[in-house]
Image (cartoon, rainbow, N blue to C red; front, side):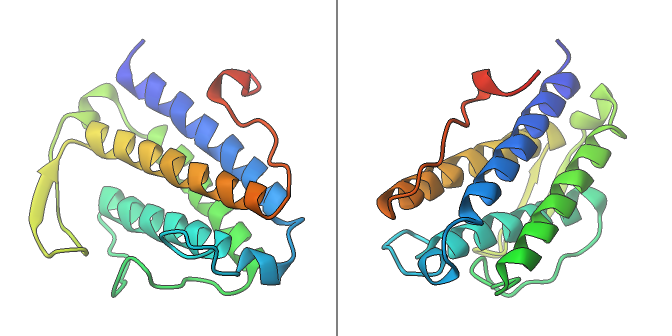
Length: 164
């Protein structure tokens, strides 16, 4: 399978996993979603916000459109419904972007300056797109632990059980 097709599958999975997590989180009271539970981004809301923020940054880099932020902890939306709408929109933008890419587009360098430390780096879009998928999976794992900690069932979001 070509890399581009594999990436499209990973992003399809990410979209489905995000939809599932947001549906579960919609059943959690706002005060509980925003409660500091000791996670790196403090709360479920904070972690969801961080994922959306970093995805918007990366999407901007991939599209050569700046997404201005001060830090990786900037809060994009305090309202959960707004956060959910932007998550859905951003997932759609990744999907659209991936269907404009050809296999060869994955090999050219993407150069950017890190928000975290100001260092300029270059990576091929193939690596960047894999990183974004991995980053989402990492933080969704934290979110599921927080959901469970609050006594809610997050269900099954394993890749192998994704609808085909």
